[in-house]
Image 1 (cartoon, helix red, strand yellow):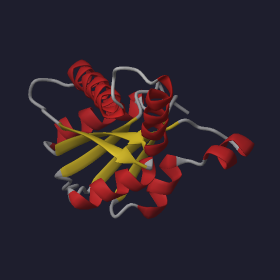
Image 2 (cartoon, rainbow, N blue to C red):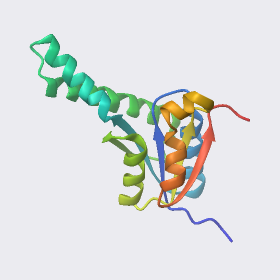
Image 3 (cartoon, rainbow, N blue to C red):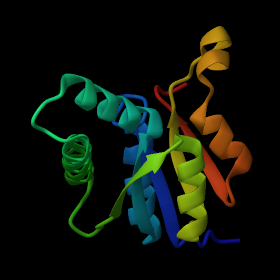
Image 4 (cartoon, rainbow, N blue to C red):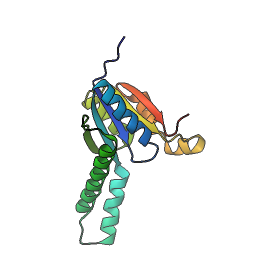
Length: 155
């Protein structure tokens, strides 16, 4: 039975661990002629921290302006990532959202009717994984579609 995947979403956090997943997603989307979304989730805690620091510093820059600058920088990084990995025949849609990463990835996959999520994993083990959780694991368990988890380094 042939694979008929028409929409895919790849999640990135701009880390080295997410780079192989991003490269694989672009390659697979190109091979399947599928629509590709690239999502970066700004953790809510980061937005709260930026806002709190801005208020604490009592600078001329408003908290909203500082958060907007943060988003603009994230968009630049996402555009650079897409440009570095992408061929001209594939133009993915870039998504930058705020939230809890796993929840946001799952929600956007459902909203865009994605058929495959591709996500990297940092490969944490033991106490570190228990304390920090695993975005990839949660997406794998709760996603409304198939999920392909790509390890940070080849196994």
